[in-house]
Amino acid sequence: MNVSKHFFHMPPMLFAIIIGCETISYSSGLSSTRYLVNEPEMTVGMEVTYRDGSPEYSHPAAINPELLDQVLHHIEVQPSSLLERIAGGSATIQQAFSAEQRSVLCNALSKALNLATSLETVTFYWATPRGNGLWEITSGGLYLQEDDLHMLLTNYRQTVPAKNPPQNPRKHPLSPLGESLHSLRAIDPLRQLSHSLATELWSPQTPHFIFPLKTWSTGQNPSHSPEVSASHTSGGSRESIKQRLKNLEDLRKEGLLTEKEYQQKRQEIFEEL
Image (cartoon, rainbow, N blue to C red; front, top):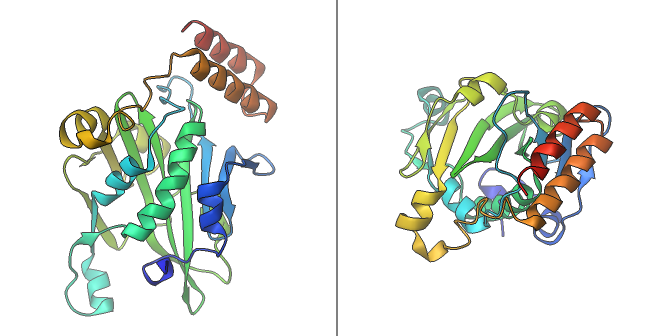
């Protein structure tokens, strides 16, 4: 599979890491990210983004790779007029992600959503070398709220000068690197919206897409159910609660939750029993 000819280069062992390994690594220092994939040119992680008083996410969530593939499939891109002048000719509308790219990314994102807590956003980042000391960066995040899957494309093919894969966007995939030269748009049933949460946590210019899981699973793609509709239906089961308590304990051990916050969240989980 020659994915690099499209727009990102994948290290030789990355595909095996994505589909065959669920080992979680932890970033050092004061970072609030757990990594499922942690390579110089690609990461998929779970970053604590919860703010006191904000609605919690419906994580962990069983979202299969096929559904995530459909989400990415429904994002189109058209280069801006500036990029057209640079590249020459007229820019045509095309899918933002190729089939190969979706295959690689969706497997890791599916696992991350199933491991994420209700306080974490699933994040992703990859860097593609473009020669002449330039790197192309794509990064963003996903989270589930009720029956809606949200996706933020914070950076899409942003060009950054660097000798090696840029570290700042790698550590902060939800931080925009500047105005994009590409225009992204959603294809129904995916919708693009200006969301208060995106404005609060990130940049209001960040493309924010929402995918209605219930509508898709019951009306437009019944062949995917019941897995597609299994987003958070097991959230109240004993097994799910046990996993949430374990995740909460991990966050306390990492110093990401105070003792007071830990006890409060723990009590909320027990109240669901």
